[in-house]
Image (cartoon, rainbow, N blue to C red; front, side, top):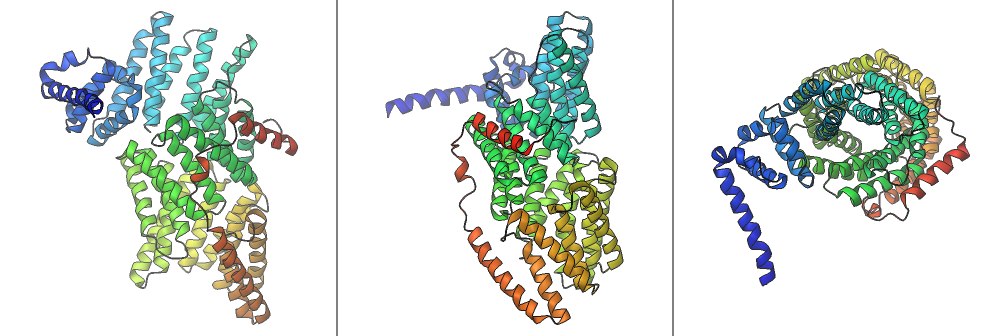
Length: 588
């Protein structure tokens, strides 16, 4: 017992001392800055806990003070709390620091190389923190200033620094949906890689290729993304930072899911990424939440919707505990949870939870980003989908029309944002056309609905092929329109059977989407008087229900990722060997 008390008493004395310093903050402000960084941070954290945000903001807006605070790296999650509180309070600490750093870089342009090197290294730490905190625009400014310093010396060390800078810059531009600038950043990084190679030097390309893969995935250039994720996986070597390995595995898993529908590979990759992130960073770290969001994406894609919702909720809880407030990382987690909840509750019609998270995502994004930011396109789309379902189930005609009109405005806004960013001929644009098609059907504008669905199918088929999951969705929606509202039963039957064939081929007999096609065919055959087929599809639907009951008797999705039976190099080699057997080529 005495030992426990001895441990406990100094901690109490320490806290008392910190409180005393904070109580006399005005008099001891300059002395505080000479304290070791961990103690100095604890003083600032006490200011935060006491709600003295103006005083805390005054400290954090000074570059030298914040540089020292960043060195207390074991307190990073607490620093995120303080920083977010300041941003929510209206203290624009992110932009103040970015502008201060940019000015400093201009001042030292003529200084010695070692002065610039020190500034670049600090810029990487500052920009990295701002990036991790979701303030991408300010992080971009910091990395651009670092890049400017790198270009002032045409020598090997600064070429390496320029490559590292480009990787970080590409990451924040991807996060901020600046894809055109991201492509330019990648080309610049490649030019520095070429310079290094000509002088007999090699820089590891895993992080760079991983970021390019993320960019191409966001633009729906899935085949290119797949080829580059293979190149990124080839670059994973012993000694590479765990963060880079985790990010490449995450990206490869997402691409394997979407492009090739290679679910076993995707599962192996994302589960190993989750395991690595938890082991290395801990279960409360933002990087762990990043992996969980991609694990949720995998589960949603393999039709394990219930588990997907649980994983997305865990990821949101982590991000809220780290960032809280009006933060972009929290917004994206809300949106992912909103969509998975919408899919999960689609047959029950209970959309309150999904709507709450969709609206929260939009509120946060509109608070911190411009109203025409591309990130709003997907959040508005999700809210529109939810509002449409609520409207359909509504028994008040006036309320139904109001909700459908609001959904229409949101869908149109999303479509315009997508077309502006990606152009007409893109999967994201096609998805928005398909969503409008479903909405027009609900609004009883059947010709407009048909036009939108056909547009969506044509774009998806040309980009993804005839037997893709996205194509099946749009084909099923057009079948529903023909069946329920336009009495075009032959066309509807043909489309339903095509949608069923694709769904079974990709996901198996227990795929959730089959229910709507089976029910559609039962209604269709009743309408045309083919009762033999009605009986046949009632039996098929009963078998499907039994399969679903077995499929959903699943354990906690996180249980089997707490331990990993494979080493990272085994996971990587297994993936690459499977690619060789498929004959995947090098990117053009």
